[in-house]
Length: 201
Image (cartoon, rainbow, N blue to C red; front, side):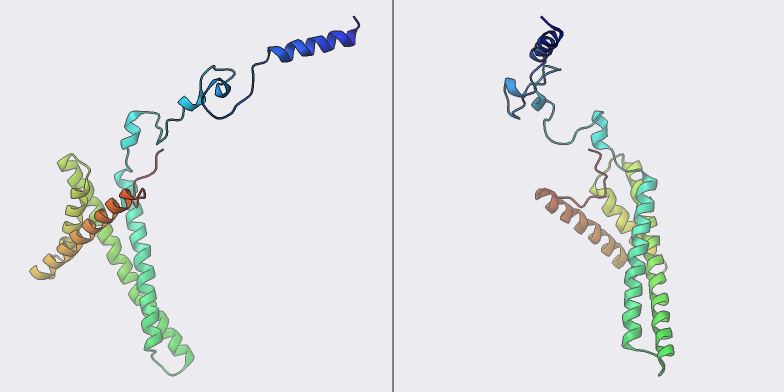
């Protein structure tokens, strides 16, 4: 037997001893892992997977929720107020020349935008702080905390305007929070979500 025949025999023996790499994707011996001798379908049970069981209940911290809420509210107020100021300036321009009209539009944007942005930012700060405080006092994290925090934030925001504005602001804040959670429940029933909780999976 020459060297070439020995090499061919060695390659044939080596290939015959290798485990099968035939994966059909279904259950049965053909889908078994050739090296671990387990069925890979057992590893994927569907749903979210977590390293620790407590990870499924994790929520963003107070600081993360507060700063994201304040930033989102401020930018929303700036965009909304600026758009309204632009509309107001274009609808009722002051002055007869183009330069005066442009100046009037810019004044409307800078007057309405920062005012609404600051107001919404303050409301977001109060809401996030009260939500965290109420959750610590009650020892639970649920929708009641959010509704109570929104009601209290509206009342504090209008605390210098009199009894009637305080009651109206509190009712508006609580109603908005309740409507948000009601809409979230509807979306969850359809397999969707608008929650601010991160997807840890």
